[in-house]
Image (cartoon, rainbow, N blue to C red; front, side):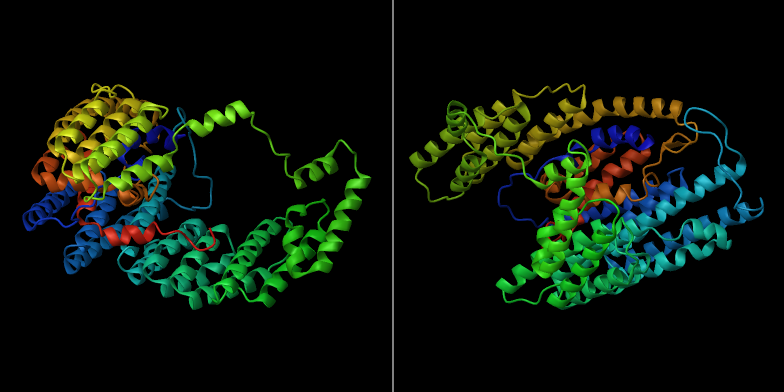
Length: 572
């Protein structure tokens, strides 16, 4: 519930992070030496702001993000920063551990209270703080792993040693989802390390995150991917055939079968050998045949590829179960699920109307054609007129705003500044420049997005006004959160727990910008000093720091690294 309440804050502050990829003009992505110098000064200023935060969890989380950004500028200094973060975190755990040990047995029920009521005893309060700190640990690991996977895993393995009580430490050991998700990210940078640590993580069983990890490793290194796939298969074959496992087996087998067919076509080494796929098929088939419930129809065709005889057995068993069951009951439902729904027909009149609506492909084609600077003026004017006609038919203001911004950017890129300004004025007419709700703020950001690509001087006043207005919303949110947050999970000593809440929230926000951080990059290029001043307009210190982090990561972040993260996974 708290997470749901926290989302509007992040959403309103950082609407930029939820938008689709910006239609960008092709510009030089390098910042000037002066802008870089200002950005480094800005980074050091931000580090000072972090040290002034009241919440230790926020200070540790944000400090790790400062170190991550500093790595792009000065690796040696960043390592020193990380070591300081690691020491602070260990000291925090040590203090909580000492206090809890002094209170007695940690096995007893230490929880009390609840949402909007109840009171926690001292042990319960400390345990909640410890839980929050362990979430911060995840963020530190993710931050370090972006640059040095080995250091990240060394810290991950050793960091909980500060908790001396074995029972207490056991409560926070092992987060299969987090570790495999982290390994998937590391695979982008170092597939060898990802495979090595991935094999260790299989000790707790194969999960769906391992499938994503396998795709990433295989995409980067076919041989390492195949080795990891065999380790996964071995774990699945050795495991007991629990009834719930057939979903996991089916997913692995489906991935392996799809990859095997594609690899054979491309004359490439597959993830799984054909024999391994046959072995997995046998495990899945036995699992289904032993099941007391009639299920597995969705895997029959897949099983048939590698074991036709088993497919015959499973079909016969399912048909027998269905024939003996109530025709209106479970068996009929199984049969219905096994057959795809009949195709629906579209009346000719409606189909004709749909065909007449310009498609997104038409718009994209027109925008692409505009990039040809050798295009005659008359031809360019025709393309622009057609694009504007397509845009006018798009449903909803947001779609129109996004398309108009892209069109203005392309027109600007071929030198027609006056027409680009005219198109952006049309876009501005669609926007409420006195935003009141989140949809208004989205549309204001789309307008800023467009101006950032064609006339940054028009974007700055709109952004400055939006920040001034959103401060009222954020302050109101904090007041409401303080009222309902009895246990201090969201607000601690008047400070929003951005760093600790959700563990990796800071990393997810600042690193999740993807291609959409082009807006911040464009504005920083245009006037770094003004962007710096805008971030200082946020009233809340922790939100001010978060805004600065977004700008700094947009400036210092490696565009090539972001491109690699956006690559399609093999087998998707």
